[in-house]
Figure 1 (cartoon, rainbow, N blue to C red):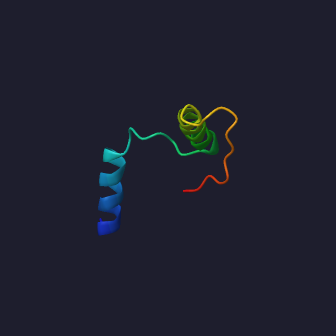
Figure 2 (figure 1 turned 45 degrees about the vertical axis):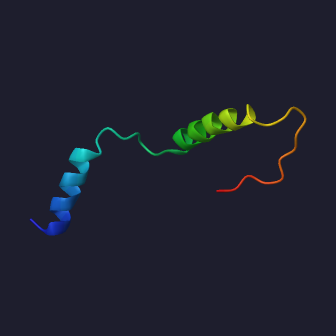
Amino acid sequence: MTKKKVLRNIRSVFTFWTAEQTLAHLESIRTFELKLVLKLLPPGGKILEIGA
């Protein structure tokens, strides 16, 4: 067995619990983050930019 296959097997054992990365999953994360941030903004405030 090659090193690459061994590492792939180890990775699959330790990352089985992670959520499948789909656009729907990413959208749910971003929606959650946005809801948290909106609580901190003043009413009627404007956002110039949302960046990384």
